[in-house]
Length: 156
Image 1 (tube, rainbow, N blue to C red):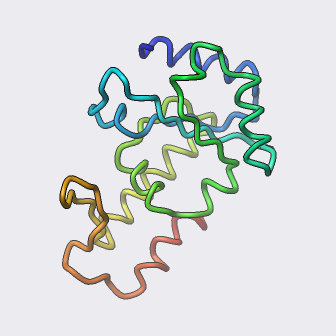
Image 2: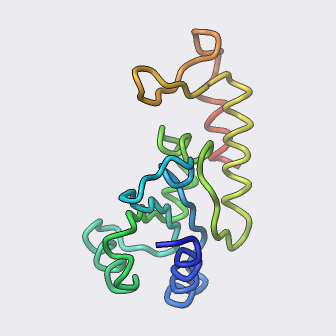
């Protein structure tokens, strides 16, 4: 699969999901430039009105994705409420490395930018320890009220 194929996939998602499609973000090894030929395409896909059931979400994905992408893409399907209201280590990784491919309202770009700003402000950095990425405090200990500061992003 190529970058052009990725754009074709996004256009396909836009046609099938319409205004429900909020954002598509490439993350993981392909966004970091560390992919091998065998690497999959990790995609965060934020869609309004997704079914609650993970199985129903998988069925939806299988019903709309082009056949060529079935074995290539690793979709992470989230509603806006799920994605923009909770900060996890994966959220932080995507804030640093994610490449926004589609952003209907500019909300994803703003959210990821705000997260990067707050990460810098509170001193949370990602380092590699024994070849694995880990989140550490720049000065060894967390600053006061760091959780409150990070949660400011999801309340905005």
